Length: 275
Image 1 (cartoon, rainbow, N blue to C red):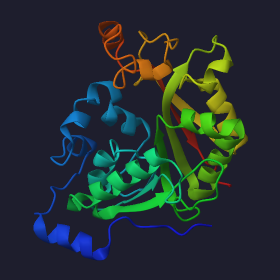
Image 2 (cartoon, one colour):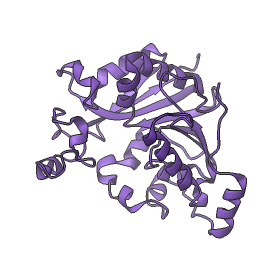
Image 3 (spheres, helix red, strand yellow):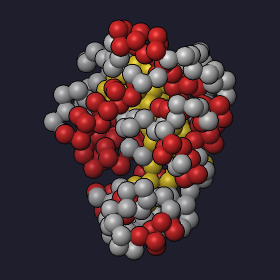
């Protein structure tokens, strides 16, 4: 098993804490969503990503131990870190240190740098995750919540169904009994050809539920908080045709901006208390 790694050395963190005034207490989700440390361009996407409503659906509490899988640039980390700062613990399971992907390496290095920019990230412990690999995202049976946002389709595109199933089993081992797994991803209509899983970025909600149950989870509920009925999920360049990526550039840009960001399912699962 790989050792848990930290991204901010004691010296770097001490320097940041000494240079910055203490961050305001985030005693509610709304306070965390409104936190002064958030990036403006991230905050501008709140209307599409509905962070407060999504995290409320996942029944988050400020004293919890939370694992965020593949935080990317830290969009949700900017909310989770201040929310958990005083009483909780946040593990950020980012891309592996030994990845051969230039994109993964750049993203990981940028995230590490982000963690040094504000004392609000002092409660963030950097770990790593890769589908199909045995990594420590957090100590076994330690997490109250494991959350992942718009990542699962990538695991399928890299490692297929077995990679997703292995990821779910790994999450199951890391959660406490009664702990919850929360997933947001791009929704493929149930009537669509499953071949679209391969390169569209969309996956079927029923398929995710089935795999999670195979891994030992109990399905709790779904929410339409991140739904977008304008999204037909059949675009020329998959989900990346839509904002914020807009892969086609200026081609039909107004059309895709009018659709907005993708239609997404929001699911929560629970690890049985007997496991």
